[in-house]
Amino acid sequence: MSEPRIIISGGGTGGHIFPAISIAQEIQHRYPNASILFVGAKDKMEMEKVPQAGFPIEGLWIAGIQRKLNWQNLLFPVKLLTSLLKSKKILQKFQPHIAIGTGGFASGPLLKMANQAKLPSLLQEQNSFAGVTNKWLAKEADAICVAYEGMQKFFPQDKIILTGNPVRSSILAVPDYNDSTFQKQAKAEFKLDPAKPVLLVVGGSLGARRINQLIAHKLSDIKQLGVQVIWQTGKFYIEEYQSLQNEQVKVSAFIMEMERAYQAADFIVSRSGAGAVSELCIVGKPVIFIPSPNVAEDHQIKNAQSIVDKNGAICIEENKLEDEFLTKFSDLVKNKELQNQLGHSIKRLAKPKATAHIVDEVEKHRNFKNE
Image 1 (cartoon, helix red, strand yellow):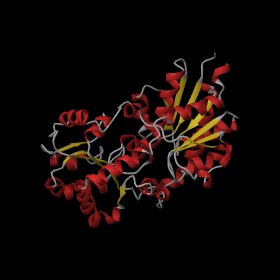
Image 2: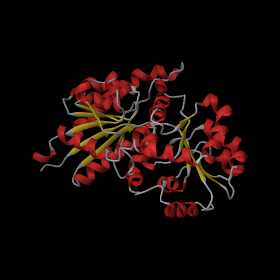
Image 3: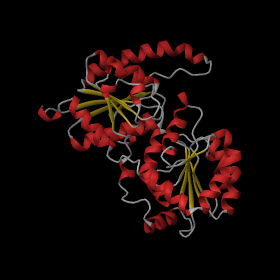
Image 4: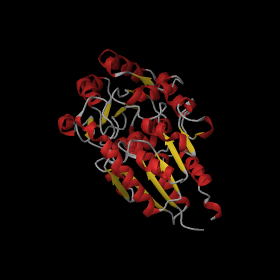
């Protein structure tokens, strides 16, 4: 069998990068001799995260169009043309058998040139409301792997495969996040009291200003409920909130072993990016989603609502936080029946085999088995 050569593009945020890395790891697991190359945006987090995962990456000079009037938008045509030309050179040099796009503006030029070169291509759409790049590429894609039902309003029906979203292998490796013995051990690792409940606060891969402001403002109320806090602020906000750390509150810029934080948690406050939602379905604990309003087409609200509609989570929009957060969080802490209902309902929506199903589709479009 010849060496499989796969090119993967996607990035800008963890929501596009981590699924791409998960797909690459599954391909590598099945085909240890595979050559895998990533393509991302030069100044975005994929240039750090992909090499950390052990894969090579090429950077494009590309950025999305800013929704607010911005002089950088004038550069967009130049950046796009430059990125298309560089993508063509990368493809000619690497000679992949298939191109995979996980969304984000970085994947646009690469997948467009792959389609032009008549390469098989597969898209992976994480959100319940499809991103601009994937909608642009859908017509020429061979297959589109999605995480939500009803995506035919964005993509050709005959190309859609409902797989779920890839989740980091470290998250999947935990057999049971609700095992009380391991939960106590995880709390102790964070230097918290194993006998008291823990709220985990996460704001996505870059942090969330409004969530951080909320937690800082409500911290004394949360502690009065007897709840301890593990708080991931994001690297841009750590200096502002580091001083709030004490015996009951553990503050960090980024949690490397997120699976341990999930184990320690009794309740979770989170953004509702697609990757976070998919992970929290695996974890199966009570969640309050606070969707970001600063994303295209309000897709985080739609992601959260898809879970709320199945009685799997609580959702509070940012403009209602002051009025609703403390009341809803207090009710959750005091209501064991509600905790169990939310945990069981969100767990039923988990798709732990998503990455394997996506790579099954990759195999269909590049006939690994018979080469």
